[in-house]
Length: 235
Length: 292
Image 1 (cartoon, rainbow over the protein chains, first blue to last red):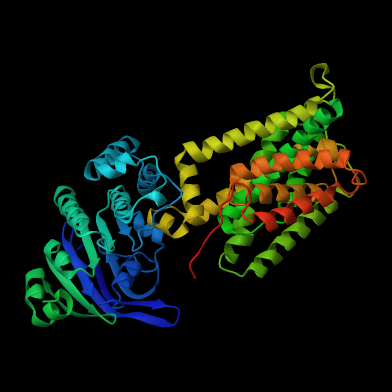
Image 2 (spheres, rainbow over the protein chains, first blue to last red; image 1 turned 30 degrees about the horizontal axis):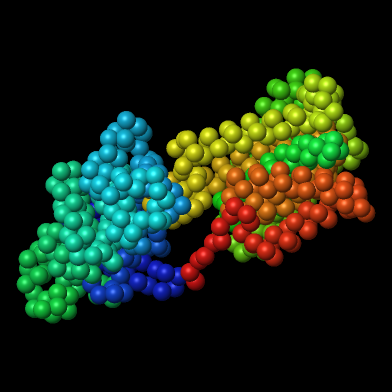
């Protein structure tokens, strides 16, 4: 198993946000974390990256990475595309992409990968020398995904990739994520409020409520569940 | 007219030093959001080390390079030992650490090399440059060395991956960690580069003001003024601000009656106050808006 957690807890100061969350994700697979606002979805991703104080166990390739520094976890090949996108607003689009590959040493391949990102997102190529802060929301989201891919990650953690985007852009973005997963075999853990979309892309879903996993199963089963349908799919 | 040109050239020469100090201050400010009040004392210490190496018979330029390297290592060490543990501490805690560093270095200079004023050699000499009445060789050398330093630093930050990583770490530490940058070490590197720049400034100004433990006190104030004028968030602006303060200082000292030599330092403070009132972010800086 590539990623496993057992009894995962997370704390913001004294406040506990996760209570014994356990899940796993194998190489090449896509899974999703669903849940309402404040359920702890973002916190799970932050915990995996060592960005909050945690308890319990997190294993990557069978090795415990609990308590590791964020940058060391990233160096294992874990790309986190954060909520709010984490853009380096004063740097150019191309510099943002280069930063994504900061831990890599294969300089020639980095240039080809940037071209590959531009192939996926032609609009980024048009704006390659512009300050990233001047991009539209959708373009910044593409840049954030592109920056994550520049790591050549083995695992991508995507936090609300559809947030604030027009429906057409969302569809385009999820199409590219599917393509990347198929072509490179990168595993993905997606946090989404747009449950319908996430269930389409992921083969397995976890339902999070107030810091606990209350349900999990194959996406079709979750999508068919009466309560999930009412609460998260809205029909 | 000739007096005016002479004063402008002299201002540029002094301004070169202020520019280096301002650049060093901005380098650390970008990384940790604090003004390094000990920047001048670090530079003075570097100049003393250079003086000692030269006194032991080291050729000037060899001593120069050695001091740049030693200053860099010293700067990294200061960050790792003193300021890394204060990473999340309050402004006051940091301020106290800066004052401690100031005192330790200032007293250390006096303890190791005593308080008597020492002359410091210039590699350029003090003859008029090519028979010119406008500028002497050392002044031209100060401007030249500063130009080379600023050029190298620009190339480093614009043209190398490490420079890009340092810019990213300063701009957005959390995102920088998420692309695998070791932000703490980037801060240490910033300290090292700032210390090296300051060391160069110290070695260049020492032949002019003579070496003593307090020689950088006034220079640091002018450097701060330059940094504030250009903008604490803009390295390029800080360099230009340093040069501008050098020229303003010399012209005001010469042409405004009663200012003279003695009140020149007031000008640095006037510049700081004026900029903070009119345009707090500085000419080339940007105001930082943060959500709370």
